[in-house]
Image (cartoon, rainbow, N blue to C red; front, side, top):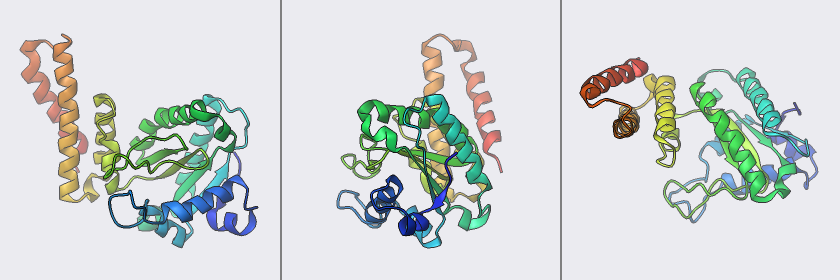
Length: 251
């Protein structure tokens, strides 16, 4: 694994045209600042200013010129484990910790390379979310819409990368996106409630729980229509599934 370097060290010691320095400038000049298309006040990523102030953002550059999905996945799993070991481990400061894993060799690969990064991210997302972590994909072709302005594309970056950080309450909209299949959405939401349930505000808990019920309802209806759930057992399936959901998110 290429070494991790604090963003402050990158800004002090790396050549200005290096991949990590380019990303560090993008973090300061884009993620930390307001944007006219954002649809709200404040920085594009509210998490970043505090992380920069505390110097709890690390960066690493994967230099393999032709990585495979398997090799890149293995590398990210290694960085995930390093993230969990890195200080701070607990408390509010731990929530400000972030890793940016940069892939400059994929920057010239166009949409195919971007899809490559997306595949690695999506393949790992379930396991990350189950552990209370978020993994985000950034590249110049990312069309994921902003939460308040669908025409704004906040995840576009000058160099392809994946970001790792702890899950927080405000991540709910990213886990409940209707663009996810109902099965995936239900899995993400159960993990969200399981990991954060006792610390969530009542409003966020209710929103997440309602979204989970909605996702499960989509699955039940699809199963009934496909003949996978017999009509005579619908009530049993509904009651049993609700009991399972409640027990999985109970404090």
